[in-house]
Amino acid sequence: MTAYTEVMDNYLQARRRMVEEHIAARGVRDPRVLAAMCAIPRHLFVPEGQWHHAHEDHPLPLGEGQTISQPYIVAAMTEALEVTPESKVLEIGTGSGYQTAILAHLAKMVYTVEIIQSLSVRARLALQRLDLRNVRFRIGDGHLGWPEFAPYDRVVVTAAAETMPFPLVEQMSDGGKMVVPVGPVGAQVLTLGVKHGTKLVQRHLMGVAFVPFVHKDEGPGNRG
Ligand code: SAH
Image 1 (cartoon, protein in one colour):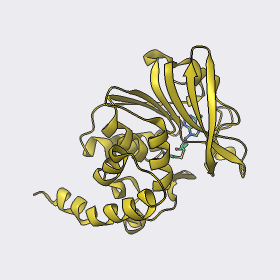
Image 2 (cartoon, helix red, strand yellow):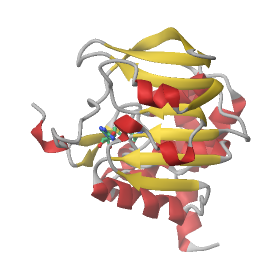
Image 3 (cartoon, helix red, strand yellow):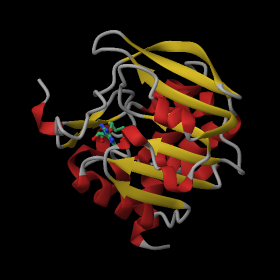
């Protein structure tokens, strides 16, 4: 056993507890999602000084003013997406790459877009370390999605949008599902959209608090 796997295993108990106490206990049932949350070493996606906090149920700072989402929210969003081993997934807001890794564990292929270069680079290294190869990374503004590889069966946005982002809906396959936090700071609602032909049937899942989806001309440093 390498030093690396020993370090990972030191946190296995912590991950099991996280899944039981913060995720299953709060209503996430999908066994594939729970298994993925047990399998992916979450601490590798937070700064080393925060490893001992990695399994607590709250967001953690990532640097660059961004946060890694709390484990329950990652699990709930992933469950709502109903990712299958055949799914082609588009993720907007790579952040730490933690949800990217969970999605890569469950899906066929993940395409992930992040506006802050340093975060994307770090996430790529973390996924390489876990040997998750079914992921393509892009640095740029995710508002326009990633048309080159469309259509996607599943779309997840991990920053809050003002409205349902329609370029992303256009890049979804028929029957595709999308999970996105919609609304202003303080009143965001996690919304599930299911595409039926030209229609998007929407359902509110729960209230949430995400960092805002930034537009390229604003720059992530210019928010209040
Ligand atoms: N699921 C991620 C969440 C990170 S927070 C995690 O758990 O680590 C949301 C991320 O969205 C941030 O990294 C932020 O930089 C990114 N983001 C915000 N606006 C964006 C945009 N327009 N395009 C792409 N990424 C964006």
